[in-house]
Length: 446
Image (tube, rainbow, N blue to C red; front, side, top):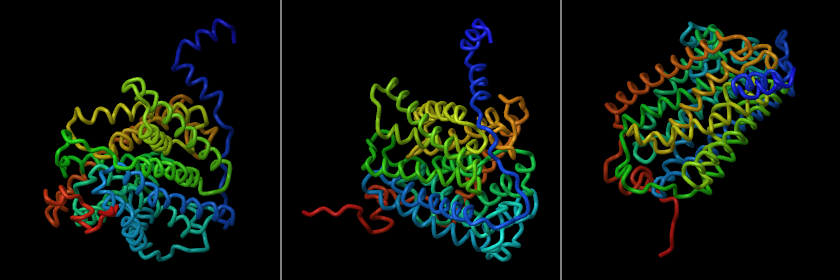
Protein backbone atom coordinates (compact mmCIF):
# COMPACT_ATOMS: atom_id res chain seq x y z
CA UNK A 1 0.00 0.00 0.00
CA UNK A 2 1.37 3.44 -0.89
CA UNK A 3 2.27 5.81 1.98
CA UNK A 4 -0.46 8.25 0.89
CA UNK A 5 -3.06 5.49 1.04
CA UNK A 6 -1.90 4.49 4.51
CA UNK A 7 -2.25 8.07 5.75
CA UNK A 8 -5.76 8.26 4.24
CA UNK A 9 -6.71 4.98 5.98
CA UNK A 10 -5.48 6.25 9.34
CA UNK A 11 -7.65 9.37 9.05
CA UNK A 12 -10.83 7.28 8.64
CA UNK A 13 -11.66 5.52 11.93
CA UNK A 14 -14.40 3.34 10.45
CA UNK A 15 -12.20 2.05 7.66
CA UNK A 16 -9.36 1.62 10.15
CA UNK A 17 -11.56 -0.48 12.45
CA UNK A 18 -12.58 -2.72 9.56
CA UNK A 19 -8.96 -3.09 8.49
CA UNK A 20 -7.89 -4.01 12.01
CA UNK A 21 -10.67 -6.59 12.25
CA UNK A 22 -9.57 -8.17 8.99
CA UNK A 23 -5.92 -8.04 9.91
CA UNK A 24 -6.27 -9.47 13.39
CA UNK A 25 -9.14 -11.92 12.97
CA UNK A 26 -8.20 -15.23 14.50
CA UNK A 27 -7.66 -18.23 12.25
CA UNK A 28 -10.44 -20.73 11.99
CA UNK A 29 -10.89 -22.51 15.30
CA UNK A 30 -14.28 -24.16 15.04
CA UNK A 31 -14.17 -27.90 14.66
CA UNK A 32 -16.48 -29.92 12.50
CA UNK A 33 -18.82 -32.15 14.43
CA UNK A 34 -19.40 -35.71 13.43
CA UNK A 35 -21.43 -38.44 15.08
CA UNK A 36 -22.01 -38.03 18.84
CA UNK A 37 -19.11 -39.48 20.79
CA UNK A 38 -18.34 -39.08 24.49
CA UNK A 39 -15.16 -37.12 25.17
CA UNK A 40 -13.77 -37.05 28.70
CA UNK A 41 -11.81 -33.81 28.30
CA UNK A 42 -14.80 -31.95 26.88
CA UNK A 43 -17.03 -33.27 29.65
CA UNK A 44 -14.58 -32.28 32.39
CA UNK A 45 -14.27 -28.81 30.86
CA UNK A 46 -18.03 -28.31 30.73
CA UNK A 47 -18.56 -29.50 34.31
CA UNK A 48 -15.84 -27.12 35.47
CA UNK A 49 -17.48 -24.29 33.54
CA UNK A 50 -20.83 -25.16 35.11
CA UNK A 51 -19.26 -24.69 38.54
CA UNK A 52 -17.72 -21.39 37.42
CA UNK A 53 -21.09 -20.08 36.24
CA UNK A 54 -22.67 -21.11 39.55
CA UNK A 55 -19.88 -19.17 41.27
CA UNK A 56 -20.98 -16.11 39.32
CA UNK A 57 -24.29 -16.14 41.20
CA UNK A 58 -23.08 -17.37 44.58
CA UNK A 59 -20.95 -15.81 45.81
CA UNK A 60 -20.10 -13.51 42.86
CA UNK A 61 -23.30 -11.60 42.11
CA UNK A 62 -24.49 -11.89 45.72
CA UNK A 63 -21.38 -10.07 46.98
CA UNK A 64 -21.34 -7.61 44.07
CA UNK A 65 -24.92 -6.51 44.77
CA UNK A 66 -24.69 -6.99 48.55
CA UNK A 67 -21.89 -4.48 48.92
CA UNK A 68 -23.74 -1.80 46.97
CA UNK A 69 -26.88 -1.69 49.12
CA UNK A 70 -27.20 -0.06 52.53
CA UNK A 71 -26.19 -2.03 55.60
CA UNK A 72 -29.78 -2.68 56.65
CA UNK A 73 -30.51 -4.53 53.38
CA UNK A 74 -27.40 -6.59 52.74
CA UNK A 75 -28.75 -9.94 53.95
CA UNK A 76 -31.97 -9.62 51.95
CA UNK A 77 -29.88 -8.92 48.86
CA UNK A 78 -27.63 -11.93 49.47
CA UNK A 79 -30.69 -14.07 50.14
CA UNK A 80 -32.26 -13.27 46.78
CA UNK A 81 -29.29 -14.62 44.82
CA UNK A 82 -28.83 -17.58 47.14
CA UNK A 83 -32.43 -18.79 47.17
CA UNK A 84 -32.72 -18.49 43.39
CA UNK A 85 -30.14 -21.23 42.99
CA UNK A 86 -32.51 -23.64 44.71
CA UNK A 87 -35.71 -22.38 43.08
CA UNK A 88 -34.48 -22.32 39.49
CA UNK A 89 -32.53 -25.59 39.75
CA UNK A 90 -35.62 -27.52 40.84
CA UNK A 91 -37.82 -25.80 38.26
CA UNK A 92 -35.22 -26.53 35.58
CA UNK A 93 -35.19 -30.26 36.26
CA UNK A 94 -38.95 -30.60 36.66
CA UNK A 95 -39.95 -28.82 33.46
CA UNK A 96 -37.84 -25.72 32.72
CA UNK A 97 -35.14 -27.44 30.70
CA UNK A 98 -37.75 -29.22 28.64
CA UNK A 99 -39.59 -25.97 27.87
CA UNK A 100 -36.33 -24.31 26.88
CA UNK A 101 -34.55 -27.01 24.88
CA UNK A 102 -36.79 -29.97 24.03
CA UNK A 103 -37.98 -30.11 20.41
CA UNK A 104 -41.39 -28.50 20.16
CA UNK A 105 -42.68 -25.48 18.30
CA UNK A 106 -40.87 -22.37 17.15
CA UNK A 107 -41.82 -20.68 20.43
CA UNK A 108 -41.48 -23.22 23.24
CA UNK A 109 -40.25 -26.75 23.81
CA UNK A 110 -42.51 -29.70 24.54
CA UNK A 111 -42.61 -31.42 27.94
CA UNK A 112 -40.98 -34.59 26.63
CA UNK A 113 -37.90 -34.01 28.84
CA UNK A 114 -39.83 -33.14 32.01
CA UNK A 115 -38.14 -34.60 35.07
CA UNK A 116 -35.12 -35.22 32.81
CA UNK A 117 -36.91 -38.09 31.12
CA UNK A 118 -34.66 -39.24 28.29
CA UNK A 119 -31.84 -36.86 29.28
CA UNK A 120 -28.87 -39.21 29.49
CA UNK A 121 -26.03 -38.87 31.97
CA UNK A 122 -23.68 -40.79 29.68
CA UNK A 123 -24.72 -40.18 26.07
CA UNK A 124 -24.57 -36.89 24.12
CA UNK A 125 -27.56 -35.33 22.43
CA UNK A 126 -26.15 -34.47 19.02
CA UNK A 127 -28.34 -31.45 18.31
CA UNK A 128 -26.75 -29.54 21.21
CA UNK A 129 -23.46 -31.19 22.10
CA UNK A 130 -21.64 -33.86 20.15
CA UNK A 131 -19.11 -34.94 22.78
CA UNK A 132 -20.57 -34.34 26.27
CA UNK A 133 -23.44 -36.18 27.99
CA UNK A 134 -26.85 -34.63 27.65
CA UNK A 135 -27.10 -34.07 31.42
CA UNK A 136 -23.80 -32.19 31.40
CA UNK A 137 -25.26 -29.81 28.83
CA UNK A 138 -28.46 -29.57 30.89
CA UNK A 139 -26.70 -28.63 34.14
CA UNK A 140 -24.52 -26.11 32.32
CA UNK A 141 -27.61 -24.41 30.93
CA UNK A 142 -29.19 -24.59 34.39
CA UNK A 143 -26.53 -22.22 35.72
CA UNK A 144 -27.43 -19.69 33.01
CA UNK A 145 -31.06 -19.93 34.06
CA UNK A 146 -30.07 -19.41 37.70
CA UNK A 147 -28.17 -16.17 37.22
CA UNK A 148 -30.59 -14.44 34.86
CA UNK A 149 -33.43 -13.63 37.32
CA UNK A 150 -30.77 -12.92 39.96
CA UNK A 151 -29.52 -10.06 37.78
CA UNK A 152 -32.97 -8.44 37.91
CA UNK A 153 -32.84 -8.14 41.70
CA UNK A 154 -30.35 -5.28 41.51
CA UNK A 155 -32.98 -2.94 40.10
CA UNK A 156 -35.60 -3.60 42.78
CA UNK A 157 -33.18 -3.94 45.70
CA UNK A 158 -34.14 -2.58 49.13
CA UNK A 159 -37.91 -2.44 48.62
CA UNK A 160 -39.42 -5.61 47.10
CA UNK A 161 -41.15 -8.06 49.43
CA UNK A 162 -39.64 -11.52 49.69
CA UNK A 163 -42.99 -13.20 48.90
CA UNK A 164 -43.40 -11.02 45.84
CA UNK A 165 -39.85 -11.74 44.76
CA UNK A 166 -40.40 -15.52 45.01
CA UNK A 167 -43.67 -15.54 43.08
CA UNK A 168 -42.39 -13.20 40.37
CA UNK A 169 -39.15 -15.17 39.96
CA UNK A 170 -40.94 -18.48 39.46
CA UNK A 171 -43.35 -16.93 36.96
CA UNK A 172 -40.58 -15.08 35.14
CA UNK A 173 -38.21 -18.02 34.71
CA UNK A 174 -41.06 -20.18 33.42
CA UNK A 175 -42.90 -17.73 31.16
CA UNK A 176 -40.11 -15.42 30.00
CA UNK A 177 -36.70 -17.08 30.27
CA UNK A 178 -37.61 -20.61 29.18
CA UNK A 179 -39.45 -19.57 25.99
CA UNK A 180 -36.78 -17.00 25.14
CA UNK A 181 -34.00 -19.57 25.57
CA UNK A 182 -35.94 -21.81 23.20
CA UNK A 183 -36.31 -19.00 20.64
CA UNK A 184 -32.57 -18.31 20.56
CA UNK A 185 -30.88 -21.64 21.37
CA UNK A 186 -33.52 -24.32 20.79
CA UNK A 187 -33.03 -26.36 17.65
CA UNK A 188 -36.40 -25.24 16.30
CA UNK A 189 -36.56 -21.78 17.93
CA UNK A 190 -37.58 -19.05 15.50
CA UNK A 191 -34.70 -16.68 16.33
CA UNK A 192 -32.24 -19.56 16.03
CA UNK A 193 -33.72 -20.55 12.68
CA UNK A 194 -33.46 -16.92 11.54
CA UNK A 195 -29.69 -17.13 12.00
CA UNK A 196 -29.17 -14.81 14.98
CA UNK A 197 -25.83 -15.19 16.76
CA UNK A 198 -25.78 -15.27 20.56
CA UNK A 199 -22.81 -17.31 21.71
CA UNK A 200 -23.36 -17.14 25.47
CA UNK A 201 -26.46 -15.11 26.31
CA UNK A 202 -26.49 -11.48 25.17
CA UNK A 203 -30.19 -11.65 24.38
CA UNK A 204 -31.27 -14.62 26.50
CA UNK A 205 -29.52 -13.48 29.70
CA UNK A 206 -28.53 -9.83 29.63
CA UNK A 207 -31.09 -8.02 27.49
CA UNK A 208 -33.94 -10.04 28.96
CA UNK A 209 -32.89 -9.38 32.56
CA UNK A 210 -31.96 -5.74 31.93
CA UNK A 211 -35.29 -4.93 30.33
CA UNK A 212 -37.17 -6.86 33.04
CA UNK A 213 -35.20 -4.82 35.59
CA UNK A 214 -36.55 -1.63 34.02
CA UNK A 215 -40.08 -3.00 34.28
CA UNK A 216 -39.43 -3.90 37.90
CA UNK A 217 -38.04 -0.48 38.79
CA UNK A 218 -41.09 1.18 37.23
CA UNK A 219 -43.65 -1.14 38.81
CA UNK A 220 -42.19 -1.39 42.31
CA UNK A 221 -41.42 2.31 42.43
CA UNK A 222 -38.62 4.35 43.94
CA UNK A 223 -37.00 3.68 47.29
CA UNK A 224 -38.21 5.89 50.14
CA UNK A 225 -36.18 9.08 50.04
CA UNK A 226 -34.75 8.51 46.56
CA UNK A 227 -33.07 10.59 45.14
CA UNK A 228 -32.92 13.15 47.97
CA UNK A 229 -31.43 10.99 50.74
CA UNK A 230 -27.88 9.59 50.47
CA UNK A 231 -27.91 5.87 49.60
CA UNK A 232 -24.22 5.06 49.43
CA UNK A 233 -22.88 1.49 49.10
CA UNK A 234 -22.16 0.15 52.57
CA UNK A 235 -19.18 -2.10 51.66
CA UNK A 236 -17.30 -1.55 48.41
CA UNK A 237 -14.72 -4.13 49.44
CA UNK A 238 -17.49 -6.73 49.19
CA UNK A 239 -18.56 -5.34 45.81
CA UNK A 240 -15.06 -5.47 44.31
CA UNK A 241 -14.63 -9.03 45.60
CA UNK A 242 -17.90 -9.96 43.90
CA UNK A 243 -16.80 -8.26 40.67
CA UNK A 244 -13.57 -10.26 40.71
CA UNK A 245 -15.49 -13.50 41.14
CA UNK A 246 -17.79 -12.50 38.29
CA UNK A 247 -14.81 -11.82 36.02
CA UNK A 248 -13.27 -15.22 36.76
CA UNK A 249 -16.58 -17.04 36.52
CA UNK A 250 -17.36 -15.39 33.19
CA UNK A 251 -14.72 -17.53 31.52
CA UNK A 252 -17.01 -20.47 32.27
CA UNK A 253 -19.94 -18.47 30.95
CA UNK A 254 -18.33 -17.62 27.60
CA UNK A 255 -15.46 -20.03 26.96
CA UNK A 256 -17.62 -22.88 28.27
CA UNK A 257 -20.19 -22.14 25.57
CA UNK A 258 -17.84 -23.77 23.07
CA UNK A 259 -19.02 -27.02 24.76
CA UNK A 260 -15.57 -28.49 24.14
CA UNK A 261 -11.96 -28.08 25.24
CA UNK A 262 -10.84 -26.78 21.86
CA UNK A 263 -9.56 -23.76 19.98
CA UNK A 264 -12.94 -22.04 20.05
CA UNK A 265 -12.87 -22.13 23.85
CA UNK A 266 -9.44 -20.50 23.76
CA UNK A 267 -10.64 -17.79 21.38
CA UNK A 268 -13.73 -17.05 23.49
CA UNK A 269 -11.61 -17.00 26.67
CA UNK A 270 -9.23 -14.42 25.17
CA UNK A 271 -12.05 -12.27 23.76
CA UNK A 272 -13.83 -12.30 27.12
CA UNK A 273 -10.78 -11.11 29.03
CA UNK A 274 -9.94 -8.38 26.52
CA UNK A 275 -13.52 -7.08 26.43
CA UNK A 276 -13.64 -6.76 30.21
CA UNK A 277 -10.21 -5.15 30.38
CA UNK A 278 -11.00 -2.55 27.74
CA UNK A 279 -14.34 -1.62 29.31
CA UNK A 280 -12.85 -1.23 32.79
CA UNK A 281 -10.32 1.22 31.36
CA UNK A 282 -12.76 3.28 29.31
CA UNK A 283 -15.37 3.48 32.11
CA UNK A 284 -12.71 4.77 34.53
CA UNK A 285 -11.36 7.18 31.90
CA UNK A 286 -14.85 8.54 31.22
CA UNK A 287 -15.71 9.11 34.87
CA UNK A 288 -12.26 10.60 35.51
CA UNK A 289 -12.80 13.02 32.63
CA UNK A 290 -16.37 13.95 33.59
CA UNK A 291 -16.39 13.57 37.38
CA UNK A 292 -12.80 14.44 38.15
CA UNK A 293 -11.96 11.22 40.04
CA UNK A 294 -11.49 7.57 39.02
CA UNK A 295 -13.44 5.28 41.35
CA UNK A 296 -13.05 1.67 42.38
CA UNK A 297 -16.80 1.12 41.86
CA UNK A 298 -16.40 2.50 38.35
CA UNK A 299 -13.59 0.08 37.55
CA UNK A 300 -15.67 -2.86 38.81
CA UNK A 301 -18.80 -1.70 36.97
CA UNK A 302 -16.82 -1.13 33.79
CA UNK A 303 -15.39 -4.64 33.86
CA UNK A 304 -18.88 -6.11 34.27
CA UNK A 305 -20.18 -3.92 31.42
CA UNK A 306 -17.43 -5.25 29.17
CA UNK A 307 -18.19 -8.82 30.15
CA UNK A 308 -21.86 -8.26 29.33
CA UNK A 309 -21.11 -6.73 25.94
CA UNK A 310 -18.62 -9.37 24.82
CA UNK A 311 -20.87 -12.28 25.85
CA UNK A 312 -22.88 -12.70 22.62
CA UNK A 313 -19.83 -12.01 20.44
CA UNK A 314 -17.19 -13.95 22.37
CA UNK A 315 -17.30 -17.03 20.16
CA UNK A 316 -17.43 -15.11 16.89
CA UNK A 317 -14.85 -12.30 17.10
CA UNK A 318 -11.07 -12.03 17.31
CA UNK A 319 -8.95 -10.14 19.84
CA UNK A 320 -8.99 -6.65 18.27
CA UNK A 321 -12.78 -6.57 17.74
CA UNK A 322 -13.16 -7.76 21.34
CA UNK A 323 -11.16 -4.77 22.55
CA UNK A 324 -13.29 -2.42 20.42
CA UNK A 325 -16.53 -3.93 21.74
CA UNK A 326 -15.35 -3.62 25.33
CA UNK A 327 -14.02 -0.09 24.91
CA UNK A 328 -17.31 1.15 23.50
CA UNK A 329 -19.26 -0.68 26.22
CA UNK A 330 -17.36 1.09 29.00
CA UNK A 331 -18.25 4.56 27.75
CA UNK A 332 -21.75 3.61 26.61
CA UNK A 333 -22.80 1.93 29.87
CA UNK A 334 -21.25 4.67 32.00
CA UNK A 335 -23.27 7.23 30.04
CA UNK A 336 -26.44 5.16 30.42
CA UNK A 337 -26.01 4.93 34.18
CA UNK A 338 -25.57 8.70 34.39
CA UNK A 339 -28.76 9.21 32.37
CA UNK A 340 -31.11 7.27 34.67
CA UNK A 341 -31.83 10.29 36.87
CA UNK A 342 -33.07 12.20 33.83
CA UNK A 343 -35.66 9.52 33.15
CA UNK A 344 -36.78 9.40 36.78
CA UNK A 345 -36.63 5.66 37.50
CA UNK A 346 -34.84 4.12 40.47
CA UNK A 347 -32.61 1.33 39.19
CA UNK A 348 -30.87 0.79 42.50
CA UNK A 349 -27.78 -1.08 41.30
CA UNK A 350 -27.63 0.00 37.63
CA UNK A 351 -28.91 -3.20 36.03
CA UNK A 352 -30.54 -1.35 33.13
CA UNK A 353 -27.48 0.72 32.28
CA UNK A 354 -25.09 -2.21 32.44
CA UNK A 355 -27.04 -5.29 31.36
CA UNK A 356 -29.73 -3.91 29.05
CA UNK A 357 -27.55 -1.30 27.33
CA UNK A 358 -24.43 -3.48 27.38
CA UNK A 359 -26.37 -6.49 26.11
CA UNK A 360 -27.96 -4.51 23.27
CA UNK A 361 -24.59 -3.13 22.17
CA UNK A 362 -23.00 -6.57 22.36
CA UNK A 363 -25.73 -8.21 20.28
CA UNK A 364 -25.51 -5.50 17.61
CA UNK A 365 -21.71 -5.51 17.69
CA UNK A 366 -21.83 -9.23 16.94
CA UNK A 367 -23.58 -8.29 13.72
CA UNK A 368 -20.72 -5.91 12.95
CA UNK A 369 -17.61 -7.91 13.89
CA UNK A 370 -18.52 -11.62 13.62
CA UNK A 371 -16.27 -13.62 11.32
CA UNK A 372 -16.32 -17.19 10.07
CA UNK A 373 -12.52 -17.05 10.33
CA UNK A 374 -13.07 -17.26 14.08
CA UNK A 375 -16.00 -19.66 14.09
CA UNK A 376 -16.97 -21.46 10.92
CA UNK A 377 -20.32 -22.37 12.49
CA UNK A 378 -21.22 -18.67 12.81
CA UNK A 379 -21.56 -16.01 10.12
CA UNK A 380 -19.78 -12.93 8.86
CA UNK A 381 -20.92 -9.55 10.13
CA UNK A 382 -21.24 -6.20 8.40
CA UNK A 383 -17.51 -5.44 8.50
CA UNK A 384 -16.81 -8.76 6.84
CA UNK A 385 -19.21 -8.25 3.97
CA UNK A 386 -22.56 -9.44 5.37
CA UNK A 387 -24.83 -6.49 6.26
CA UNK A 388 -27.83 -8.83 6.60
CA UNK A 389 -26.39 -10.22 9.84
CA UNK A 390 -26.71 -6.84 11.52
CA UNK A 391 -30.41 -6.75 10.55
CA UNK A 392 -30.90 -10.24 11.98
CA UNK A 393 -29.20 -9.21 15.23
CA UNK A 394 -31.36 -6.09 15.48
CA UNK A 395 -34.49 -8.16 14.97
CA UNK A 396 -33.48 -10.49 17.79
CA UNK A 397 -32.77 -7.50 20.07
CA UNK A 398 -36.14 -5.86 19.44
CA UNK A 399 -38.04 -9.13 19.88
CA UNK A 400 -36.23 -9.86 23.15
CA UNK A 401 -36.83 -6.37 24.52
CA UNK A 402 -40.51 -6.35 23.68
CA UNK A 403 -41.17 -9.86 25.00
CA UNK A 404 -39.29 -9.37 28.25
CA UNK A 405 -40.57 -5.88 29.04
CA UNK A 406 -44.24 -6.48 28.28
CA UNK A 407 -44.21 -9.94 29.82
CA UNK A 408 -42.44 -8.71 32.96
CA UNK A 409 -44.93 -5.88 33.43
CA UNK A 410 -47.80 -8.35 33.21
CA UNK A 411 -46.17 -10.78 35.64
CA UNK A 412 -45.42 -7.99 38.12
CA UNK A 413 -49.07 -6.94 38.06
CA UNK A 414 -50.17 -10.54 38.60
CA UNK A 415 -47.71 -10.93 41.46
CA UNK A 416 -48.87 -7.71 43.06
CA UNK A 417 -52.47 -8.89 42.91
CA UNK A 418 -51.56 -12.26 44.45
CA UNK A 419 -49.14 -11.40 47.27
CA UNK A 420 -48.00 -7.79 46.84
CA UNK A 421 -44.63 -6.71 45.46
CA UNK A 422 -43.56 -3.97 47.88
CA UNK A 423 -42.78 -4.08 51.57
CA UNK A 424 -44.68 -1.82 53.97
CA UNK A 425 -43.20 1.67 54.52
CA UNK A 426 -42.17 0.85 58.08
CA UNK A 427 -40.48 -2.36 56.91
CA UNK A 428 -38.53 -0.46 54.28
CA UNK A 429 -37.54 2.13 56.88
CA UNK A 430 -35.97 -0.38 59.28
CA UNK A 431 -34.54 -2.43 56.42
CA UNK A 432 -35.47 -5.68 54.74
CA UNK A 433 -32.99 -7.70 56.79
CA UNK A 434 -35.08 -7.18 59.92
CA UNK A 435 -38.55 -6.74 58.42
CA UNK A 436 -38.37 -9.69 56.00
CA UNK A 437 -35.90 -12.06 57.66
CA UNK A 438 -35.50 -10.95 61.31
CA UNK A 439 -31.72 -10.93 61.02
CA UNK A 440 -28.92 -8.40 61.06
CA UNK A 441 -25.79 -8.65 58.95
CA UNK A 442 -23.53 -7.06 61.53
CA UNK A 443 -23.67 -7.43 65.33
CA UNK A 444 -22.06 -4.67 67.37
CA UNK A 445 -21.23 -4.83 71.05
CA UNK A 446 -22.80 -2.11 73.19
